[in-house]
Amino acid sequence: MKSRRRNVSEGHNTILQCHSRTCTEEYSETIPHDLIIEIVSRLPTKSVARCRCVSKLWSSLLVHPYFTETYLTRSSASPKILFACVKDGKVSFYTSPQPDDDKASSPITAAAATYHMNFPFDHVIDIYRPMSGLVCIRDGRILKGRKTAAMVWEICNPSTGQSVILPKMKSRKRTGAKSFFGYDPIEKQFKVLSMFTDNDFSSEHQVLTLSTTGKLSVRIVECGIPHCPLSDGICISGVLYYKSSTEKRVRGIMCFDVRSETFRFVKVMEPFIGAVHPQTTLVNYKGKLASVMSGWSYNFIGETCTSFVMYVVQDLEKQEWSKHNYKFAPGLIDGFFAGVTVAGELVLSPKFPSSPFYVFYCSLERKSIRRVEIQGMGGFKQVYTFVNHVEDVKLMRTV
Image (tube, rainbow, N blue to C red; front, side, top):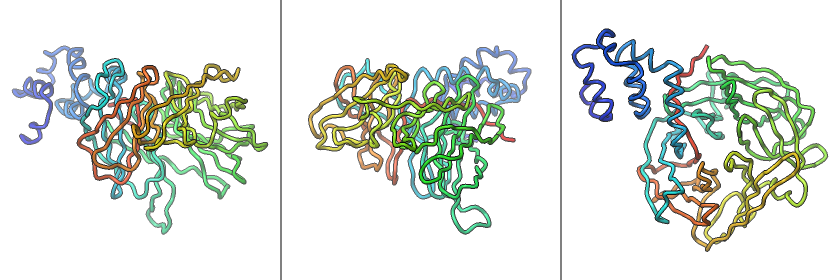
């Protein structure tokens, strides 16, 4: 027990000392509940988990929606970079502070990576962009009684260590399924959209919902526009966007409203057809859908690349896009597009880590580039990098 407390933060030690004489709820009542919530909401996620073990009263306070929403609000004010690192059948999660563009002073800096926890997986197929603190991972898993791998979707919370294996979506189609992870901020529901294809075009669409109560439901939804998904999806303000092509080979953006579960296809007209190029990456630029591609016409920038272009949607229905070209000296950046920070910096990071491990921040307004060395993280086979990650300590209920 002593060795466990040595690793607890100073603020958490202070709280534990207040309860060193007794752990009864009567003594806890001398500390106002609002003060307990105010103090604990400023602690790291691991300390929150320990504080929930102090007493029954503390446990009830720290699982209450008022506390978890307070913690999420504080975390949202200081989002982090999330690294999902794959090696030896495990996905290990690390976070690092997300620099503030306004306080940038040096083109080369360093930041420490904080380890959270790892989850076991057989064969990671894909890791989707985090939604409100949760991460969806698609895994090729050997299930009990089977000889071949089956596709399994699992929702993980790096802040609490919880994970939920989603039920398998069954279909009469024998072809593969394309899936997307979305979040409805109004109903606070996480959803996985899966579509099964015939001759590369979607013919059956299913939605799996994980609600705030932990209830899982799967249902078929109608889509009157058979289409072929051409990219990963990105969810912005409750709308899931992904590049797609119709049966008539018309390219555009498919919009899926996560709350109403309805589809809408928007054809992309010239001169913005480059925004749906197969190698572009969809990003969230200050709340607006945007598409970015390197001067090589790829989704990454290498040592000899000297430019990238970004299209930002001003009005998708009216086909109003703004186009931005950025040029820089060769050899400054080496990485894949990971997203755009709240401050408006485009982030690039290697998928196959080396030592030292660098993340690059491109300020789109100041036309400057920073290289940040991420310390305390290495030896992994592959790294997925995500921007604007928030920590959510709400416990997932499963039924």
